[in-house]
Amino acid sequence: MDMSYIVIIIGIILLLRLFYFLLNNHSQQVSNIIVILLIMYDWIFIHLTYSLPSNIAFILKSFGEILIFMLTFLLIGRLSYNKCRIHNIDYIFCFFIIIPFVISLVFGSSLSNMALSGYKDFFFPYILSYLLFKSKYLNFKYNVLNYITVIITSGAIIQTLLYDGNLSSLWFYKSFERFDENPIETGFYNYLKDDSLRATSIFVTPIDLSITTGLLCIYHLSQIMMRRNNRIIQLILMIYAFVGLCLSQTRVGFAFVAIGIATLIYTKKSRSVSFKTLLTIPILFIIATFGFMVNGKIDDGSALGRLIQYAEFFNSFSLLGYGIGDYDAIYKYDSFLLCSARMMGIAALLYFIMYFKLLKYVIKNYRSYRVSQYAPFIIASSTSLIYAFVFQHLAGSIALT
Image (tube, rainbow, N blue to C red; front, side, top):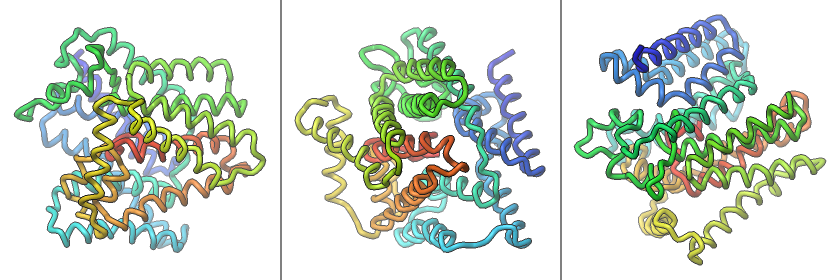
């Protein structure tokens, strides 16, 4: 049977189960399937476009938007029956979502750009997480990450072993043939390092593989340090995830692991976790990275390009931003921080304030039974993402979600 048809069957089964569990209020199953679908999104839905009519494939690819609509409907139902309350943070969240929309209208950005590029890439993760939380569906079983580690790293190993030296053999190559010039060929340096493949596994970019496997390494290490599950199995899975990270041949994942280890050691040794102290860990790594770039210790084209982008950004920065449909905000910068600031101007602070509020909540309740089991992983992964905000374009990636 053709791989595309196998993927179609897997994707449809997952989607049907997701909507069944949503309607029957099975919160943990809903969370688990959403995580699996988000991580395997590229692999599932790109294969769907190969075999299904374009209109059907488009509908299935819009599962995220359909999910948000259903969650919004369920949330309205809960509010009408007084099963959840509106707090000040809810008004802040609405303001935070509306502001970039208003900026875009002022600058004349097209609605199509806003809907397809801006909102989906930058705001989908926040909106989905918020709706899952308010609708009482945020109840993820972290053990599913054990299986995801096996799937992702196995995919990277198989892809590396089967690579024949031709980029057209990559499983997602055909999906970019609609362009006059295939961006995989023009951006070959993103997929090759000294003629060696930078593996992507079930993702479309090595960066997604690097960040995801880096986060998985942190998760398995946190379970070992917390003495959860079987520590031998967690050690084996951590090593296996690290193999996937090495096959990506991308630096950011290694930085994630280093920051994650430092954070886990701090949370393990400290009786009370300080937000300010915790924040110094990624900040020190960021300063060190800039220092290495300036001094030429990291002297490849990618590092130099980031320094140039920061210089160009400050020359064109606008306090009001350029709107969520601005081309440069979406595509130009290799930094999520610069993309957000270019898009929303000073209002981009709201984006990161929301992020830090969530992190502070986990830290505040670190020792409580409700979050203690996975709090070290959540804290360590969150501090690692602060580093990625500065040096990686995370919009639309699985890492941000």
